Image 1 (cartoon, rainbow, N blue to C red):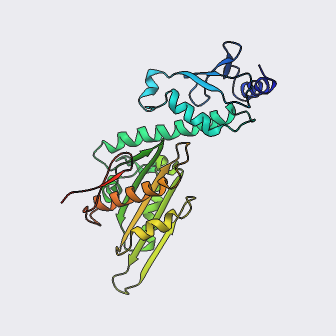
Image 2: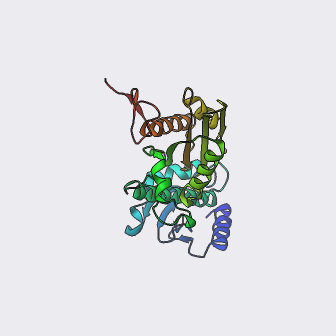
Image 3: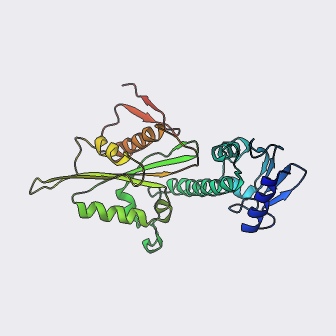
Length: 280
């Protein structure tokens, strides 16, 4: 065992528990992620580690957890691991931290799927709004897009008719009161409003940390009035590059189509965020 690996194992077990990294052979460890301690990840560390990355050999996840972690296999874990690895630097702590975020996103996705299958709109519940859910009136007013999943990032958009900035802000506050939506990495917003009496026009947007996303949403609302759109993204641990803007755009348009704000005459959305022209 290299000195770097020895120090890393000692530190991780001191931070989490003595069972977090258990040596199985001279270069093989079984890792129990703190975010899912029932799981076991078998990792092999080359003698040259950290100059060479570790290898995921196998993964074992309790059956009770597999429903909301559909792709936590060797390949998925390897993608996360290599995304954390930098030559010459230990990476297990970063890997466990990134895995925690990914598992949280997967749980959010599972909960969203359950809610989307109900009679209410996605991400809402007909129960008491005091615990972070929506009442049925708020649920019925949101048009919700299909979910787009790409490299473990999830995107959902919602659109609603609004007639004042105060109404838009109130709707956004209620939306973010939902604990699942509040935990999204980004909740990007845009609205365009034209008052009936004064004819005043107002438009605004918010990136919520996703640079330039709000402006793109605002551009999508061009020629539309009295509508707001919110796109939620749960980051999956893998950078998507420009593709993230495509998914933001696609889900936002899908929500606008479902809400009747625009006609569905150009594109169809699939679950991977790809769009295809519809035949007329």
